[in-house]
Amino acid sequence: MSETIELTNKAATAAAGATPRTVALEADVEYVAGHKNMLQLIELRWIAVIGQVTTIAGAMLVFDVRLPLVQMLEVLACLIAFNVASHLRWHEHRPVTNNELFLALLVDVASLTMQLYLSGGMTNPFALLYLLQVILSAVLLEAWSTWTIVAITLACLAGLAAFAKPLALPFDHARGIGSLYVQGMLICFILNAALLVVFISRISNTLRGKAAQLADLRQRAAEEEHIVRMGLLASGAAHELGTPLATVSVILGDWKRMQAFRGDPELLEELEEMQTQLKRCKSIVSGILLSAGEARGESAVATTIRTFLDDLVEDWQESRPVQAFEYVNRIEQDLPVAFDEALRQMIDNVLDNALEASPEWIGLEAVVEDGTLLLTVRDRGPGFAPAMLASFGKPYQSSKGRAGGGLGLFLVVNVARTLGGAVAASNRPGGGAEVRLRLPLSAIALARD
Image (cartoon, rainbow, N blue to C red; front, top):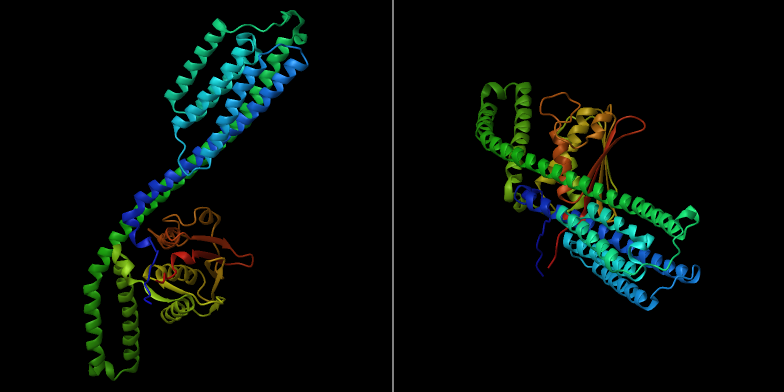
């Protein structure tokens, strides 16, 4: 049986896929908002069904008003059938378009018109319910659809005034609140007001949520574009640094073989330290080149979670002047995964930031919870300022006061987000800061044939 590495890490190809992915996410936001709006109309239609049944029963049984019961029940049955069909359509995984919302409101207008035609036309106080349909169309539909609904409702009102037979009700407007027509008007107003407050508030919340999500997605797209520009700059700089680093490496090798240096232990020790730091610089440059473009996917290494983290911690400790490093690996089941240089750099970046804030002590804890790798980095430094916590992960947000600072955590957040993970930061109650990295195992797991 052959084993193939399928690294689902998409951070390497963010430059190529950022725009299509953002478009897809925006389509998802539109999809959710459209379905929520359709659900509001379905709920409102069920309320209309209940209201019509109650009104017909009350008019006939309490006020002894003669109504064409059979025809009105037929209209009601058609409305119920349409709402059941709308329920089935709402559960389908297809976007809800403006035309579908427009059609749904047209059905509501047609149903209301038929019921009013059978129950007095313009003399029916519930003719004011047309306003509900007009206001809903203004909130939900495009401009042309809204004005079409307005024109249709006006035509329906004119048709009711011209062709509907009036209700056989006493003309007793002089009785004021005691008038049956006035009472119907008050009930209609209460219904209109209550339904508008409830449903317009819900729809407005949906539209505000949609706008906020779209704004967040556009911000992410801008950040990804920023990362692409930074990646191109870093790749070019890495290529340029390759030659001088190789030259310095050759010179240091020649110096170590010279008699003047070989006879001086202190100089020889300093040369060895310079070579160690030079190797680290060359490793960083190689990592940048591997991380640039699609070549990064080829640098993925098959390993296990525990092995990767243990090796990373060992390499990091050897190359950094940390006084005390507390590493706790609580991963019980060692899982086969594929890691590439970007993930190593991401974790190194968080540890480096903690080291700058707290050179005397740093803690790293690793655990797997519910299919997610959770890495927690702690320090005993001054912690994050409230303004930094509020804009955590945004570019150029740094407590170090350097021009261009704050890009490290910005890259960490975006690499984690590209993998479907997240990064959170907080200040510890006893002092210091805590950064939590969450990465879904599905994004780094090996696929076996």
